[in-house]
Length: 137
Image (tube, rainbow, N blue to C red):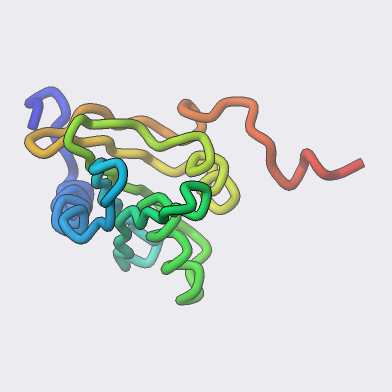
């Protein structure tokens, strides 16, 4: 981990959980495994990995797996998410939109297999987002 990006203990735990779950990714087409670990406001952690499909649009990203698991368990408020890939890739646009639905102030921790590359708010990653207020007349 980059010494300039020292993490609070709860964030370090998220990165470790995301690295662990990344190993369960089902990625026979892209070979691009992603792990995510989502921290709910009550301290619970929900993990997810990407699951590909031969019909590519049916693929689901790790971030959305973690968030749907959390929502299906009754969670609606989140503090942070760690996303781990081999290269330290950022969440895709669809995941940014999905996370924004529940946690526009979410902290996003992006890491590769050895270090944390960035810690940034979702609001910074996804400015001027489409949200519930966008639907109001």
